[in-house]
Structures are given as C-alpha cells and as structure tokens.
Length: 227
Image (cartoon, rainbow, N blue to C red; front, side):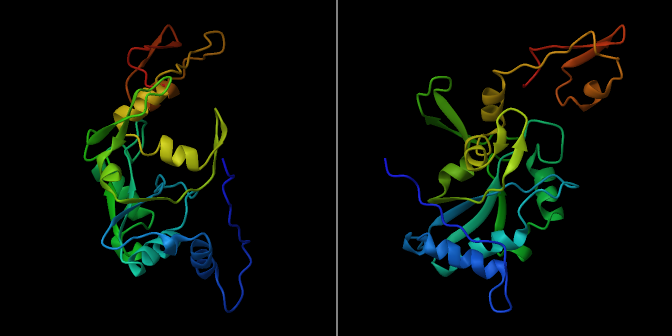
C-alpha cells in the first residue's frame, strides 16, 4: 500500500498571504478540487469544543473549507455526534448552543451546523464492518447520508493513547451515543479504596449515576458505567 501523502505548511504569515489563504492553497495542493462536489452534500466533521475550552480549531478555518466546497459546487455542513459524558454536547440542542457559543454558526462559517445523531443521539445507521470487537458500527445518520466526507481535525492529548487525531475524530467522533458506548464499555475504571478520601467529586461528575459513596469510600456500579 502506498504511503499517504502529507501536505504541510508552517504558521508564518506575510502581508500578502495569511494563514487562511495558506489553508486554501494547502487544500488545493492536496487535490480537493479534483473531487466531484457538484450538488453533493459534504459533511465536514469537526469538534466544536466545550464552552470554556479553547483547544479547538477556530471557526475561520472551517469557513475556508466550507467556502471551497461551495466554490466547487457542493453543499457543505459542519457536523459532529453527541457525547456520553457530562458537558454541553450530549444532546443536539445543548450541542448546537455550545457550537454557536464557540463561534460555529451559519453566519461565521458560511454553512449549516448539524448534529449527526439527532436530538438524543439515537439517530444512527448500522454499518457492517465485521471487526474483531465491533461487528456493526453505529454511525450518526447525517454523516452516512453525506455524499462526501471531510475530516477537519485538531490534535489533542489523550489519557489512553497519548494523543488523538484523525482516527479519533472519525472513529470515535462519528459514532452515535450508542456507538460511543460500545467503544468505551470495554474499559471500566475502578476506585483504589486505600487512596479514596470520600470527597464525592467523582460522584458529582458522573453522568450516569454509577458512583456511590459508602463509609466515605467511592464504589462504581459497572452495570451503569460507560467507561
């Protein structure tokens, strides 16, 4: 198999070529204009970020991609699926509010924002993959309905894998809530009783009420835990 080609540019800007212009040139160099976008729905998969967290791509970059898709005759939309954990992205209404709060709106990006797995994360399409652990991937329907898929990814630290990038943005990010549950459920956290001080912080932050405090020691109900 031929190695993937990686197109790179640095962050230096000049008076006649800013970073947004450099991104557009990068997309064209990578051959994006060779894709047939005419009258096709193009899903731009992105992480909108939790409000208060600044470690996400700026909406300006998303607009560059969306504008190029439109220039090529396509119908772009920004998308992500709902999350399992506590936060502002576990249902479509709060998720959209979070996206808008972080600057991802039709006015700033030039395209609509869709939450791919719907209001409560139940709008999914089963995709046969016959993997070792997962036989059917549960993918947000809006992503599966798209004609073209573009992954617009930021790198982030990850407690299990070191960092997350394109594979996480697609593999985990495109999963519906049930899909994420299936992927996370193989790993179950446990409490070191000797170190637990019974402060209750974990119990308060658990989105699924899986943690109880007894005699100032936390314990986890793995039948409720999503990993």
